[in-house]
Length: 261
Length: 342
Image 1 (tube, helix red, strand yellow):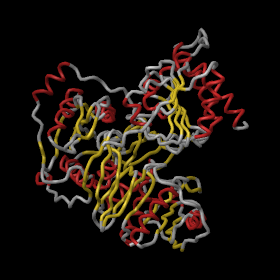
Image 2 (spheres, chains in turn red, brown):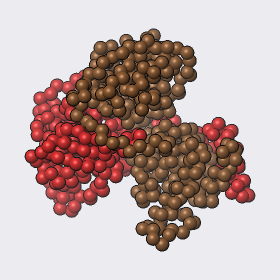
Image 3 (cartoon, one colour):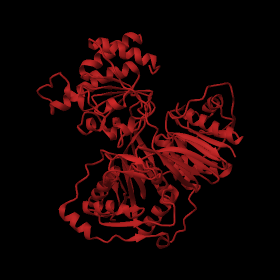
C-alpha cells in the first residue's frame, strides 16, 4: 500500500522581525514572511517519509493568499501537490473553524493515512489547531515527535519517539494518525533552483467550505485587540567591583534584596 | 455551571502547577458565583482529590482506572469530553503543559467549544470570558473574547499564583472511563525519564548559556571530535550545572548554542524553543537576539553576564556583569554556596 501523507504550512513573519501594533491596532512587522519555522521540519519529514514508503505528499495551507508563499516554498522543496483552503466569511483565527476546514480538506483527499504538522504556529502562537484537526478527523494524535522510528503502511502502524515533559517516550499507534514534529527530527532541505522555477509556475487550487461539503460552526472565539506588551521599566545596573569575587558578592546581595533567591 | 480545573498527575502525584489552574478556576467561579470542580484522572486520583479540596476545589470528579495510567490522550480526552457534555461547565481550565495543551484542545473540538491557549490574564464580562495571551512569539499580546456554553482555557505556567493551602474538602464523585483498553490504539513502549533535571517551564530560576560557552580556557583533549564543542560541553557540565545545582535551577540555552551542538534542543529558550517565566533568569554568554528575548522576556529579574558590554541582553537585564562567564560564574557559584549555606 502506498502512503498519502498530508502536511500543513503557513507564512509567518521572519523570526528576526520586529513585530508591533501600529496606531490603528494592526499587527505590523518590518521583514518579509517566511515559512513557519516549525513547519520546515514537517515539510521535510513528509517528503522523506513519502519517498521511503513510495507514496506521495500533499501540502495544505488554511488561510488567505498570504500563505501562497509558504505553499510555493513547499512545492519547491519537493512536495507533490499544494492546496489552499479558505472561507472568506469565516473567522479563520478561531481554531475550531481552522481545524474544521483542515479536517474537511483531508477528508476530501480521501486516502490520507498520515498528517504531519510542525509543533506550533509561531504567529498565532498555538498548537491547538493540530489536536483539533485530529479530533475532527477522528484520528489519533501524537504530539512532539522527535523521531519516526517505524512507519509501516501495509501493517497500518507507526512507532515514534516523543519529547515529552518527563523524558523521551517511545509509542506506537495505528494509522491514520496526526503527528506534530519538533526541531531536530531532520535537517530541512533548501529548495532547488529547478524546484523554485517549477513552483513559481504552479497554480494552487483553492477550496472553500462548500467544496469540502462542510458547514462551518459559529466561531466561539474572537480577537478583540492586539496590544504592544507593556514596556519593561528597566534600569540596568552594571555590577562594578575591583575583583570578580567582589562583583559576585554584590550581585548576590542584590538578588537577595530582590527576593529571587 | 461549575468551573472545571484539570489537575494533571504524574506517577500518582499532582503536578504542582495544576494548583495555579485551580486558583484561576476559583477566581472565575467567584465572579460567576458558582463552584469549582477538580477533574482528576489516573493513579492516586482519590488522594489527590483531598489535596484539591485543600487548595479550594468544591467538588472532584475522579477516575483511577488502569486505562488512565500512564497518561495517554485518547482515554483522557474521551472522558473529559463526556464529563463536559454531562456537566456543561462554563470553563475548563488547565496549565499549558504538553498534556494540558493537547487534552483541552481535543475536548474543545469534541464538544465544539471555544479554546484559548497559553493565557496570562483571565476575566469574565457578562456571559463571555476575556483572556489575554501572547502572540507572535510574545512580541505582542492579544485580548480574546470567548462566547458559548463552555470555553477551554490553558494557562501559561507561573502566570497565575498558586492558591494558599487551607483545610477545605471536596465532595468526591467517582466516574467511569469511557474507553476500554482495547479501544485505545496508542501504546507506550517506554519512557526514558529525565526526572533528575529541573523542568524549564516550571523553574523559578533558569540559568541559560549561549555562544560564549566556546570560550572555555580548558584545552580540549587531542581525541575530541570537535574542540569547540568539547569546550562548550565541558563548560555546561562543570560551570553551568554546578551553578544550577546550587540554585535548584533549570539549565537553558540560546539557539546558537543548540545549533552548534553544545547542548540538546530540549534546553533551547526562545522563539523556536521554550518560553520561560522564572523569577530569576541568568543569561551567560548570550548576546540576546530578538528570538531569544521572545522566550525569556517575561522573567521577573534578568541577570546578564557577558564580556561584551554592548550585547543587547544588557538592555533587558536588571543586573549586568561585564565579565567572561568562565571567570565570573565559578566565583558566583562559590559565593552562593557560602551564602545559601550549601
